[in-house]
Image 1: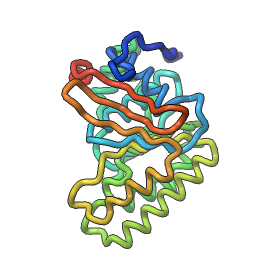
Image 2: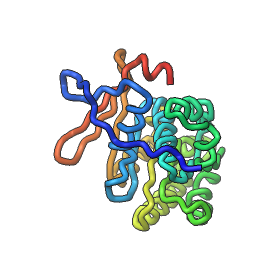
Image 3: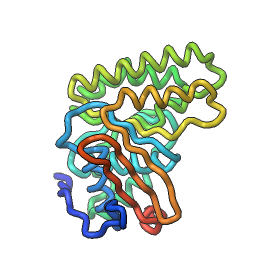
Image 4: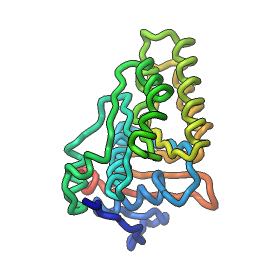
Length: 236
C-alpha cells in the first residue's frame, strides 16, 4: 500500500526575530524535512545536537522519511527508539502506525565496539538489502563516553567510525547524526563532538527554552531558526 507523500509547506507565523513557528505535528515534520532531512540538498553528514530531546527530533525525521515511502536505517547507540511516538506521528498524518514502522529498520548497539561494527561492517549491506539511502545514528557518541574503555581506544574507534561515515557520504548516502552534548564526566572525550561537527556538512543546534524548542542552523546565505512551541512539544 502506498504511503502518504507529504508536501513542503510555508509557515504562516513567525517570531519577532524571524524564526518559523511550528504549531502542528505535520508542520514539525515539514520543517525537519526543510532543515535536517532536506531531500533537495547534496548528500552527506548532518549533525543535530543539543539536549536529550534531540533524540525525539531524530525520530521525527525518521517518521517523515518513512511517510514519504523511503526506507530508513536507524542505528541506536542509546536505547531511545520510541514506537509510541512513531505511532502518534503516523496517526497525525492519517497513516497506520504499522505502515510507518515497517519502513524504519532499527539496530541497537550497547557498547562502542558494537556501534562501530554496525557502522563499518553492517551498514553498507543493510543499505543494499533495504535499498535505503538515509541513515539515522542516534547517540553515536554515547557508548564512546564509557569510562571503562581507555581513551586511546575510544579515539581509535571514533576515527574508524567517522571515516566509514564519510565514505558513505561520498557514495550519496545521507547520514543524520543525532547526538546530545557531551556529559560533564566525559573529560577529554568531549572533543568527539567538536570533531564530528567539523566533519558535518550541516550542523543544527537545538536548545530548550520556556516557550519551546529552538533549532538553529549556521552557514548558508543566512542563519536559519525554527521554533517548536512548548504545548506542541509536550504532546508529541
